Image (cartoon, rainbow, N blue to C red; front, side, top):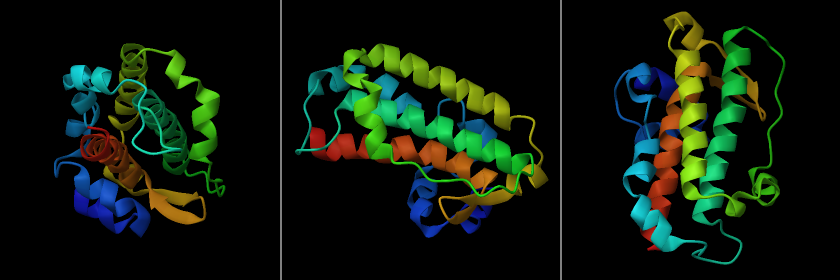
Amino acid sequence: MKNLALSSAPDYYKGYIELAPDKPLIDVLPTGGIELYINDMAMLHSIGQRVYAPSKWTVNELIQHLIDTERIFINRALRFVREDDTELPGYDHNAYVPASMANNQSIEALLEEYQTVRKSTELFYRPLTDKQLLNSGTANGTKISALSIGYILIGHPIHHFNVIMERYL
């Protein structure tokens, strides 16, 4: 299925899909990507509110970005699966960060919210047929499938965790 996700995604997202395990989507959705953050809470706390460069996000803001992105992308997948052919707009993820007030929350609270959002994502994807997974639509000017979105939601947190490991420590 991952190969189908790669073939039905814009080039921009293929790096995220590549980071996802090559397993059936429904098998990796429950904790895919999120477990890295949960298993390394001490490291996340040690970073605190530091950023690696001006205008970069704190760990809290990064986790909130993952939550916001998952919510937006699941809305897209829902519309594609339900065969809504309305072209969907993009969103400015950089504008979401300051408005989120993520630094006023604990990492634990953010990860609890993220796990809850992911559980909803898993429940959404669980009953989908292969045909539904391959339904696609246009968002932010590019065509993408519901299957690709699922794998992106696994690879996206892995990408950002890699950034934490490379640049924050």
